[in-house]
Image (cartoon, rainbow, N blue to C red; front, side, top):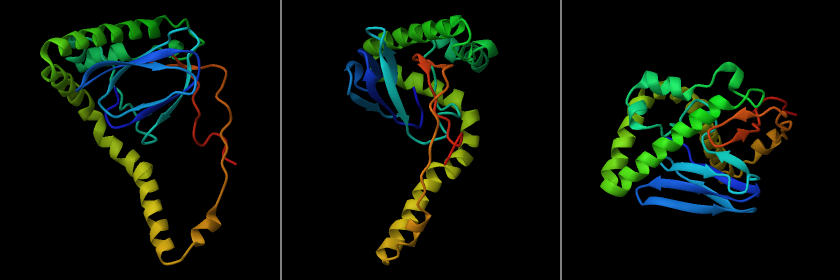
Length: 213
């Protein structure tokens, strides 16, 4: 679950589903080539690779904040209740952070996340919104120590982009299009063959600033 970022899926190939928990309860949305699905902060989501060939392009809002850890995995309550236990369960050993490793640590983390997802789904079915509110309170406690340093990331990234657009619109209202003289093209190389281990599969990550030209 992302705390401040909207996430979007563009399905490139394969079939599967995204299972979600939110104020409206449980929902399963099918994924097929060409599908475009997005969900807002607070939507708890589990990606299911139905045919083993599911590949998606993931777009994240608020560049820099997803990378800074705005995500919380739905581990069971006993894990979420203790920040140290959560951090230990979330982290992957250095040799297991990419597809170069065995993948065993990532699968253990995944399984623990599915256990917590199932626990939360059952609680939501039984108690309704109060179960979700309890989960969100635990999320708030886990993220509070991180949130302060996110402000500088937000100001340098998303806020800066919005402020730049505001200046451009104001200039255009005056008939001033001089900012167009700053037009540039940028390029990022393809992700490396070695992929990162994510919570919903392996990730080929485009790294901003790697090769702009």
